[in-house]
Structure formats: C-alpha cells, structure tokens
Image (cartoon, rainbow, N blue to C red):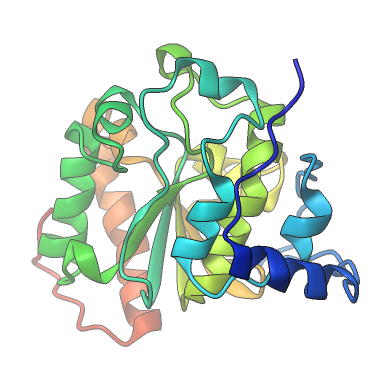
Length: 245
C-alpha cells in the first residue's frame, strides 16, 4: 500500500516550491555537553519538501502533516496528537508517544502521568501549563503503549524538529529514555546521563525521567526536581526549594 501525499495549503505549497530549489542539507548536529551523540536519520517520502520547508507557524505544519499515514501507527490511532501550549514557549517538554487517554482526547499528557507533569510545571516550577509547549516524539499512540519503534520515530522526527524550529525555545526537556535517545542517539543512558546538559538543534536540552516512571517509582521525584531546578536557573526563574509537585 502506498503512502498518501500530504495535504498542503496553497500558500504553504508555493513557499515550499521556492525553498526546495535552494535547499542545502544541514550539517550534522553535535552535542554540547558532555559529548556528541549520534542521531536517527529519517527518510519519509516528502523529506525534500519537509527539510526545505520553513513553516511560518505551527498551524501550517499541522496542515502539512494532514491525516498522516507515513508509518504504521496511523492504523490504530483515534486522534493524531500534535502538541499544545504556547507558540512562543521558552520551555518545550518532549515525551515519547501518546497513551490511551491522549489518543482519545487528541491532546498530550492528559492522563495520570500528564497530571503529574502539570503539577511539576505549575506547583514546582511556578509556570502555567499553557506557558510551556508539550509534545511527543511520535504523534500517534503505539499499540498497547509499547515503545515507539525506530521506523516510527524516523517518520515523525522531522515534524518535531520543525515544531522546535518554529517555537525556538530556550530549553528542551526530554521525558524518558525514548525521547532522549531519539534526539541524542541510542547510546544515551537515562539512569546515568539524566540531569546533564546536552544540545539539540543548538538548543540546550535537559533529559529527565518520564512522569509515568515517577508514578511507579516515587523516590525518583527528587531527581526530577533537581533537573527541574537546573532548567529554572537557566531560564532565570526563581527556585523555591520547598516547592512540591
């Protein structure tokens, strides 16, 4: 079965035509701290257009994605979960993939793990959830909440890259092993390297545990709070030592 072409607005299509003619592939990113890590590469059928497309807004990008069938995850989804939050967010959280509740709602992090993330953002960091941006590496729910597979990540990663380019945050916070490995490479070890600063697309990146992991291992909340404080200091936010998620 062939892939269906993406549905683009006329303005987006015209812009992509102009940009594609002058596109030069970017040089590979290098990690800042503590070492460079390899990255997954992606080859969806519309790679040249997507790589060249400097979308003006998240709405344009969402139109480009359309009713995506670029990987097998579309067969089991209820809703594509694009992401939500401020389009000018200083901080972007990147999870792994939608769960059951997110698939039903079409919104990221609305289940129990999402409620915990909201408490971390609002009670711990002193921000409003709608002041940050929240999304996932893959935008459709993997069956039985399994980890996204490599081909699924490779098909969806360019959309995340474009979201980050449009938002241009000051910090990225990856949640869990899968999202960190998708952006930093398969060598990344969450238990050893969370809490250290890395770089993705020249944006400082702080990897930490996924909120779902914290629900199973409450003792790890202390580690996540330490990681959150590093992000807060980087953003110039007041750190309240007695804050609780």
